[in-house]
Image 1 (cartoon, helix red, strand yellow):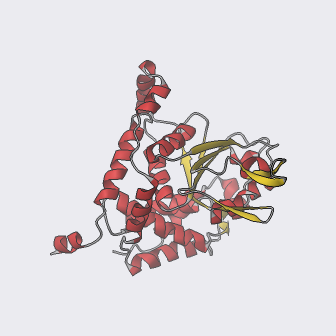
Image 2: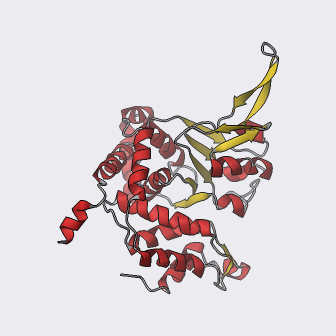
Image 3: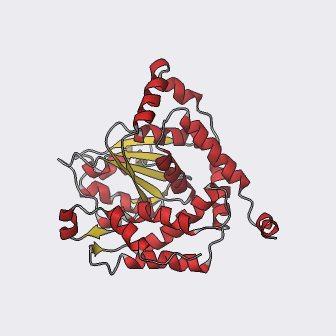
Length: 325
């Protein structure tokens, strides 16, 4: 009886097939980093930006380039530096003597998938220039509004070790990232596979072997499918309790915003669809809660001195809430 009910609901087979094909294509070049790849795909399907924190050399840039190639979209990379100005990112008005008027020259942010390397290296003035474009997918310069092309995904990276010459991202900007993905070193087995893959083939050859899987039009269709994924009211309440638990926790100076609740909801639906289900279960919510909230909460100075991490606190908060079944 349950099987019949399941068959009558949302058909997610096309989305599921596309996800499997994307994973297979990326695995031709990238060894491991499955969690990062899945979260990047969820970010794309949920129309959300992703912040990646990891040491140099763990394939952050390469994965972003691969994603753009697989989706058949444009890709641009912006290296943030202390002397970078807002106009270097957004674009600027240039006088055209032939027309005797100013015309807007688009900056590198006008692309589909944009990799911002070391986002915390640019000063606050340049970081704040991203606020409007990240949230509203538009840029206003000289009173004129310029809209971004679809799809639009910012993948920003920062190095957790080297802090000299960096500027801490303001909480308002961090809140605009759907996920913060923390990447560790590959395992010994993965590193051996990386060496074996690279010893006989040039990286550009591997990149050229990757084929296009989906189009921007298909992304729109997949987002519509995700909207149809079912979530029980008890699970919606479960999300609200998790986020609310960060706001009255004595170990936290700042709790998560309502934007975090919406992010967990959307990401849980996308995760369920990518796993081949048209319904959300508690495990989807628990899995998405940490990458959604780890950058949205601030620990008290005492807890930071004790070496407690945001991930540990979120896990502890979830552990104290009854999981609905």
